[in-house]
Image 1 (cartoon, protein in one colour):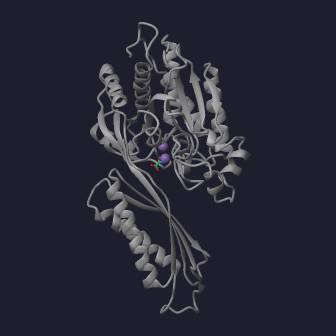
Image 2 (cartoon, helix red, strand yellow):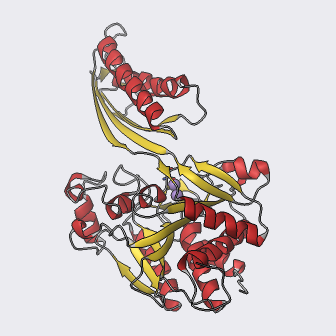
Image 3 (cartoon, helix red, strand yellow):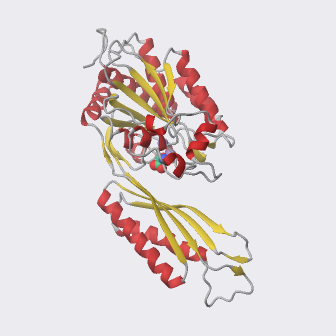
Length: 421
Ligand code: HGY
Ligand code: MN
Ligand code: MN
């Protein structure tokens, strides 16, 4: 099959999508259901419709663009990722998997490949936790791991619930309708930047992901006693921020305590109330992210953090409320999908490494409903979630090429030019 990825067009589309952002280039901020997110979605949908893909959206805005195969009744082969971006992020996280997946499909169309199983591109809603405090919102609902009551339970900082925000964005219908049937996909693949330094350090252009780390997140609300910074003397102060600072240091200590390189802990959000230089903080709010490829180890770290919070509460005579937002299991990738990716790399003469993903992705949840694997490309310096996040046009095109070959192999062929089942 004469498969040619149009790298220039793919890069141009990535650049165009990056312009739908609350902040100026090279940074990208595109929070779910904001105008920039909806403009980005409309842009991607238009590109899909231009090549005859049938587009539909579910009740939470997960967007499906399908190339019907000769056997449309068979479970499809899916690929996709997300386009939402955390504040002040880069332009490649997620988008490489969406636009790279689209270009893989277009390249197969141009090569005259005709799929037996349908091929489908999936744009997931709200992979990032920015607005509703939990990551992979769309894929959790697709995999049936998040109940429909979350529509009223989850609330953004603007006070709108998930149901209110999605309806305002034009996505109606019951969240009960989102979950996919177990045999909806026969395989799912996600192309993504590594968001780590290993591929670049090893000089390898592709990573075949065999497992995805297990994320957990905690919310911590601390109530102390505020007062005038000049009048409240040091003895007896019940400073909520200092208690929060001790909790954040306890997160670091707990993550380091396992001695395992795969254990990480981060306090990424810290809000101080009332936030005046001459006022002793009476309130502090933290959001904590803990991950490990080993779930037992990860849960032991969570326990250590909660125990430390109890001690700090006692010592500093503050009130600390902790809330576990999510504590997900890690994912093993589907062996046959991993093998298909490896076969495509070998066929193309591309070097690759098998690796785990320390970042979580929608594939973490898609692996609950279909054999799933990920394909990584290098990102400069391993940097991600920053404006200087960068992946080269060449690496992106190579990833899309292997993705196209693998999807064709998994979807089967109805003509003789293509390797496949
Ligand atoms: O946080 C993550 O791992 C993903 O980039 N949302
Ligand atoms: Mn991300
Ligand atoms: Mn991502």
